[in-house]
Amino acid sequence: NKTIVITGVSSGIGADVARLARFHGARIIGVDRNEPSMTLDSFVQIDLSDPTAIDAALDALPEKIDALCNIAGVPGTVDAELVGRVNYLGLRHLSEALTPRFNQGGSIVNVASVLGIEWPERIEKHKALADTSYFEEGVNWLKSNPVPQETCYQYFKEALIVWSTQQAFTWFRDHGVRMNCVAPGPVFTPILGDFVTMLGEERIEKDAARMIRPAYSDEVADVIAFLCSDAARWVCGVNIPVDGGLASTYI
Ligand code: NAI
Image 1 (cartoon, rainbow, N blue to C red):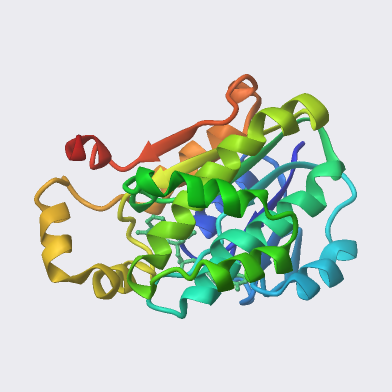
Image 2: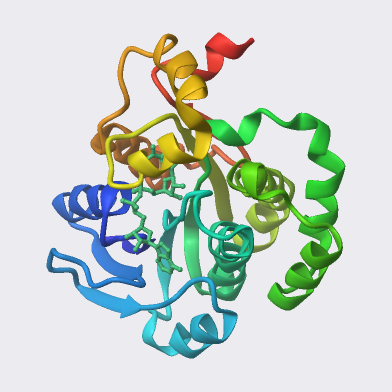
């Protein structure tokens, strides 16, 4: 049975991935800043915005891992630096620290967003950020390349997709670990209300007119579970929208 580390396990999409993976017999190691409401094989409380906290918790995480689901995230209604730390730098730090622990056939799934695929003109910035080699170097790069508060959520989700895509082949070749992203559209979870505040009524109405409905979190969890599974053993370096067709309407 697979050993799966799930960040953001205490709410929304992360909790649903944990439920699904447990149902399939996986051993679940949950990571979150908040306590989970369900019973897991183990839970490690980590504030993913803090690289020292991540390093301090590494001993509590398993020596051998089959999958890492990077699901924890904060909306753009919190300070832009915190968004960068949790949604990008912390995720990257944890993934890099755990990569040597993967069994053959390992998989990393990063939860991006449909909002992270709208700003291709910033690709060079994202590549430069991806080239920073550790957490504090990334923080310093962001100090000299400040990200506007209004678009910080989009910015770091896109940066995440760029980093994942750039990194994927090397990690697959050198460590046997596949890395992929999923990009959900709106999902019925506690964070959804923050997106309304973040994007404003006008944008929400525009999206609502292009959508059948927001997703239920299990609809996103199923795709994450697929990417963790051996059925996806040759899928590497992709970003799969899980949005009921929303992104396709922007073409
Ligand atoms: P949620 O708010 O229900 O869950 C987020 C989880 O991340 C929470 O358990 C929270 O405690 C944890 N978390 C936040 N900051 C943390 C930190 N510093 N350290 C450790 N854990 C932390 O939200 P949801 O919807 O389940 O979000 C999961 C992912 O999906 C996020 O990355 C989000 O950006 C992404 N997403 C969500 C969409 C939606 O409409 N709900 C749409 C597109 C992407």
